[in-house]
Structure formats: C-alpha cells, structure tokens
Image 1 (cartoon, rainbow, N blue to C red):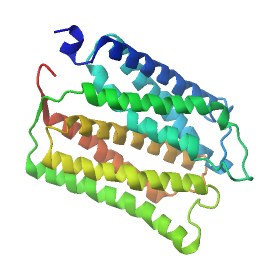
Image 2 (image 1 turned 60 degrees about the vertical axis):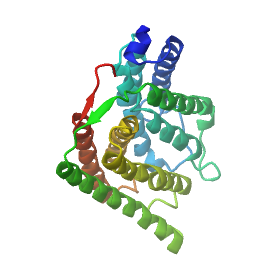
Image 3 (image 1 turned 90 degrees about the horizontal axis):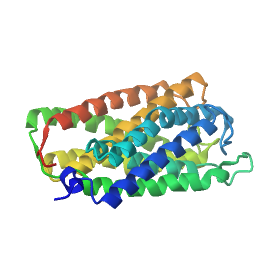
Image 4 (image 1 turned 30 degrees about the horizontal axis):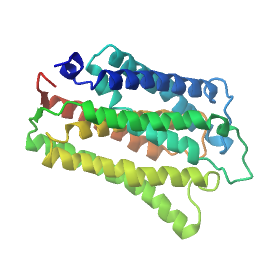
Length: 290
C-alpha cells in the first residue's frame, strides 16, 4: 500500500495537482479582493454605487477566510496531511456561487452602469473550474468508513430549528419574488435586477434545497452520506460568513437595500449552522484507516 493510499489523498499526481491549484486559487482570490473596493478600488462593478458595501464584505471574506483556507488546504495536501480534505471540502460550493455571481450577476445590459470587470473574467473562470476540481477530488478522497451516533431526540430538535429558519429565509426571498411578479418591483430591484434574480435563484433553487437535503440525509443515510454532508456544511459555514460580512458592511455603508430583519435572520441562521457543524461532526466516528 502506498503512502498516499494510506492517508487517503489519491494518487501522487492528483494530490500534487490539486494542492497546487488550491494554492493558486488562494492567490487569485486574494488578488481580486485587494483589487476590489475594499482595498484599491481598481475593479469597477456594473451595479449601483450604493451597494458597494456588499462587495466590500465579499472581498473581506475572500481575503480573511477563503484565501487562507485554500492556502492551508493546498499546503497540507502537498505535505500529505489528511486534514487537507476537511479544509478543501468546505470550499467548492462557495466558490461556484461566488464565480457565477461575479460573472453573470452584474447589470451587463444596463446603459446606466459602467465597469471593467470583464478584464478579470478569466480569473473568475479559473475559480469556477478550480471549484469543480475541488468538488470531485474532495468527494473522491473524503473518509467513507464512518459510523454515526445521532440520538433521535437531539437530531429532531436540531432538524426542527434548522428547517424553521431555512423556511423563514426562503419565505423572505419568495415574498420579494412575488412582489416583483405582482407589482414589477421590490426592494433593490430597480437598481440591480440582474443581481436580484441571481441571488434569489441560487438561494431558492440551490442553498435552501441543500439545507433540507442535508437534514434528510442525516436521518436516512447518515453513514453513507458523510462526504456530502460535510460538503454541504462547508458551504453553509463559508456562505453565511460572507452573508454576515456583507450585511454589516451594507449597514456601515448605508446600503439602500439593507434591512435589520434580514441581518437578524442571518445571524440566527449562522448560530444554527455553527452549532450544527460541531453537532454533526461530534456524532461521527471515523475509522483509523479513514
């Protein structure tokens, strides 16, 4: 048995290649964050100037959380450390969301806005391709020989709390979509309709369903679905960090689309997700060979 097989990191080529891509992605995210409105302001986005706070929040998370996370994952992979799998699995869904938002989520067709984000298109594209690589590699090498020890009472309480706040979050976005359908506009819609539809589509069609699927898997396939559950929780954890950062910068920058209601719901969701992450991890036992 090879050393790579023993630590479960795939073939030497896979380990080194993915590790190098992770380091490169960390550098790309840091570069884009520094070039954005948080630091240098070189990148100009095609959207309303009043919502720049959201962009600053995203830059802060990329610079302080995602870039270090990917850098650590890449270095640990190159050093053959199994911990790399747990860091890497937290990143791909967040990166896919980020890359799509920053390529198709702007007001490209509006003559009211100008910008230069197309100059960085291939960097965003690199992030998207890297995310797909991390997704496939992470699921392939993640520990599968696991045993869960969830007690039904505790899992039921957690599931109810998580489902409740997922439903509240979904209802907030669905209400705004219905407002647009009924009246032609909603909060923030007039200044950034493309961003409005991008966020509501991904959250209602991707983020929220992932939450309910996670709860389902915890009940019916807790052992077999361990890699997928960790993938989902990695996304929830990183994405809620970005949402909170954007919410607070929206408040500070006096973003016209800011609502205390949204920030309060997101803080409760963050608490539920953080508790769930440690709760789920504590109830799994991984075999020594995993």
